[in-house]
Image 1 (cartoon, helix red, strand yellow):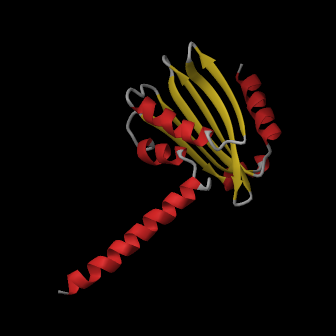
Image 2 (cartoon, rainbow, N blue to C red):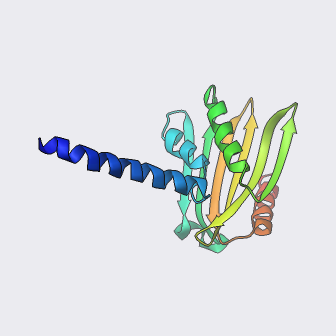
Length: 155
């Protein structure tokens, strides 16, 4: 009897929480690629790196997350769908299309909680997927300079 009384309030609470999470995702505070990190970040064939503000203060980065899948298989479509969903709300987009397929993309999302947000995506059939999410005070020009600086030091 007691359980029946609790069912309706619990159902209402659950539906309210789901609506709140959905609203957060739709207003741009939670990027769709977050689901990719959550879903595949601990898979055996995935390399994930997460760094927080303490490690990145000199770059004005608060959060850095990267995920690499060497052989994405069917997951490629899931990753592309998440990237495409975030692409739709992006303020700035830079993409490279090879033979009709997105091979790399840079997406500047609208700021959230006073932080700039960026998604970097790369797909190469031989090397797999690399997905990066960055949040911080750094501006787009600073991020590009940082990426170019690292690319030049890698050679």
